[in-house]
Image 1 (spheres, rainbow, N blue to C red):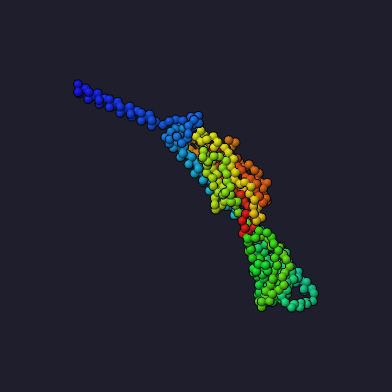
Image 2: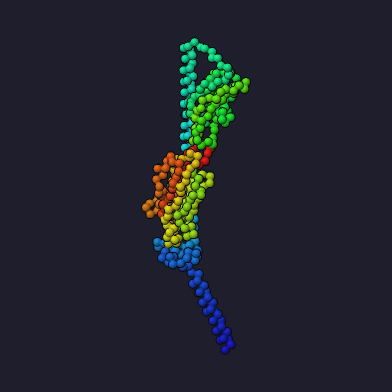
Length: 362
């Protein structure tokens, strides 16, 4: 009897162990959810082992998180390529401006040469007369509108043969002397920066004997043009609830380009995450005579195919589009608003080029 009781106890213990294992197995068995199921539960209750049925294919939450990271990694790589295009565009704009400045300076030099040739021909045709000049005197300046780096011709008398100085009188800044003669000076404007408006200036000549001339006639000094990116780091407003939706948004501090990625999974994220309107710039007034020049904008769409995120062309169901026609803002000193309408699993990149006085900021 005692032996039978022992076997009975052992049998009962074995059954309890089997029941416990069965219960644990049931508890640990992954749950399979459909998009409809997910609308009734909180997303933070899902485990990494739980399974989501997306279009008949099963993915664990862990797999989906990994796939989402893959898509974001691809967004980042696409952004790096975009920034290379941005830098190329900026370099091209700066090269064109540099060429314009060199071409303008060369044109002035040619005009000065023509003026001096005409003066020489006139002197040869007439009986030369020595001009009586009691002190250094500036008679004229050419051209009457200049930019930093431009050559200027100063005509007058008693500048003497030894090299002296030509100053912008109001700034006490020297010009760079190329030719110095008793009755003419050819000099170059210094590379002045940091002034936003054109202004009037006068020149004054100081001879090697420290004799000072009169002030020249007033001429106009204009700033050279520079190009930069719009810095919009404090302007981006994501058109979705960041507590419910995954997104990545930033403006690159070095280049001031903006980058937004919206990544979601159908049936997992809140439906409000599937589309929206992001505000990139809102009522921005540029200072110091800076103006809108041009822009670059690209979008990339990604779709879940064969258990992997593949880059695909954007279409009517997945897109990111500029709402405003930025072409209408070219040359304007303000940008009232720039917004991007988007739908789908997308990333978009953009930057805005501005031009303005060299050495100032907008």
